Structure formats: C-alpha cells, structure tokens
Image 1 (cartoon, helix red, strand yellow):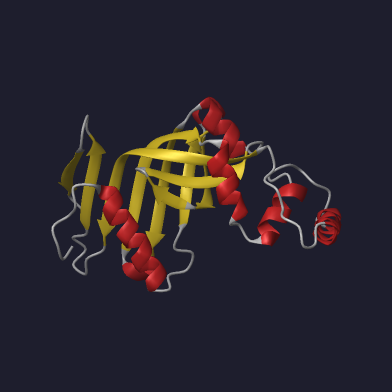
Image 2: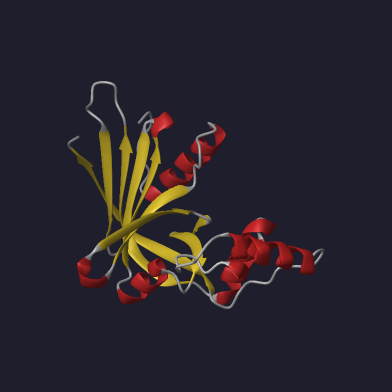
Length: 196
C-alpha cells in the first residue's frame, strides 16, 4: 500500500470499489455472500453490492429465497470481493438485517426495467418445468406495463450487512502479500497486519 492505511476500512473499500470500476474490472460490485443453512451447512452465491453507506453494505433479494431464509435463521454472514486484475480482494464478516421498506423501494426503482420485471415473474430458486412459461409471462408483463412504473414487490427486500471484521488483501510480486485485518472495537476499528 502506497500510503498509510485509513483508520476505517470502509473508506478503503469504497476507494477500491471506485478503482475497480475505473479500471474496467469485470463486475466490480460482485461479492460472494456466504450464509449458514440448516445444520450449520455453509451456502454461498454471488450477489451485487448495491450501495456502501453508513457503515454498511447493501444488497437486494427476494425475501422467499434460500439466502433470505438462512439470514432469518442466522444473520451471521461473510462476503468476499475479488478483483484479480488489480491484485486485490476484500473479506467482510458481519451481521445482516432487513433494511427499511423505503430503502428497498429506492434500490428497486434504480434497477434496470428488465430486472424489475424479472422480480415479478420468477420466484428465484424455486423448481420449474422449463423457462418458456417464465419468458411468456415476462413478455406479457412487459407489454401490459409499457410506459408504466414497475412497483417493488412486497416480498422484495434490501439487506444491510454491518461488518465487524474486514480483511483487505493486496497481491505482491514476491508473494509477501499485504493483509490488513480490521476488527470492530467498542468505538473504533482495531487494525493489525497478518502474515501472508
């Protein structure tokens, strides 16, 4: 790292996200989200970070999904961002909670129209016979709502992750990679350097 690390790791994470976008990294806001399922079984998938604000990471999902169900049972999560072209990754651990409805609707409104339509016709993760019936429903809803706003479904939610540990990893040519670990203290972050 060229400069002294900040006291708050979220400031550096914001900067890294901006730099990944500026560098044209593929899917710079993609994060692998790990939850805990029944019997302690881990479950991971890639979601898109919608916003990082007020000390929290925000993403959206259908509230009927497996990840939402697992979060209700156990709010402890881990997330990983990986930008291989920049030689960086960020690991986040924390607790997830359902955000307020107003924020959910705000984030839903800025989704591309196709994504908003899809949220109405597909129950993500549920078994289906084939995709053709979903495509027909999608086309019909698109035609039916032409020129209209697509409202946020009642069972759609924004999830807020409040981190209590963040590790920021920077690749080095000699394999002595820099690993900065931040842990939340009672009033500030505690920072330490880990061996690679």
